[in-house]
Image 1 (cartoon, rainbow, N blue to C red):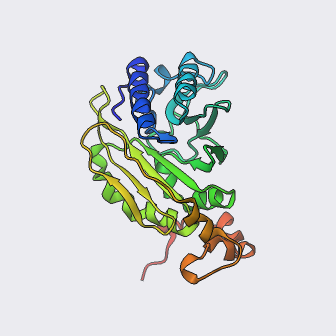
Image 2: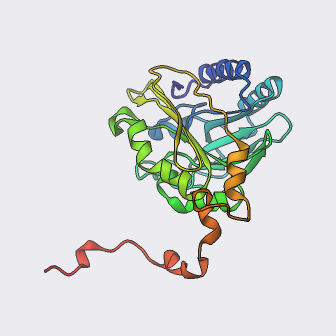
Amino acid sequence: MESIVGDAERNFQTIAHLAKAAQKQEISLLCFPECALDGYSAKDASEIGDTLESTWISRLRECSQDLGITLLVGMVEHKKNQNKPYISHVILSPEEEPAVYRKAHLGRSELDYFTSGDRFPIFSAQGTTFAVGICWDWHFPEMAAIYSLKGAEVLFAPHASPIIAGDRKEIWLRYLGARAYDNSVYLGACNLIGNNGKAKEFSGGALVIGPKGDLINQSYMGEEGILAATLSAERINLIRRPDRASMRDSFFLADRRKELYQELLELDIMDRSKMSKE
């Protein structure tokens, strides 16, 4: 999706248009890119966005209810008595109150403009348990493991990755397959496309990965559109059942040894300036 910074009305109309198209394809859950409602521009964050009590959220919820679709929409979220907003993804389901995930791992260029989230919630809708991580979040494998252990079957990975960062689909395949494979989850990623109205161009791209790291579907669209995939409950239930049928269908997290992992909480990256040199 193309999203213009600060033009929430235009962006909302695009979201509603794509949601109607998704309903015709009998899609149950529809994920939009990072900051889709407000556009992505860290330097403009204080001037754009709104609260979860805004009319934008009410209108998105009405759209979800009218169409019977769960919408996952990126936004710049402001809160009272807080100087910097969150990069958030709001979850709007026909029969549920709006819920939210707030980006926990901010990129270094975002730290001066946004507040980091501090929770890893999971959500349930349309018979599916799922979770969200936003862009930079997915470079931290612990997050995917937490979600899987909490019962998430699908992970959504909305992005706002510019063209300058490189071919998004090629880069995604270097690590998102591992997040899905190691944690026995489906994973769906999508990205902004086009110009944000502030001279930044986004590369687009969307893909869906299976619980064994296999590429189920990938988009080569050069414009706005929907990448649809049907995810098999039987496949993930087979992998996650308590009695292991074969190594091929293993749920790796079931065999982890968490009593050995305390070091992970204590270690930090090595200061290379203090490393001995031969």
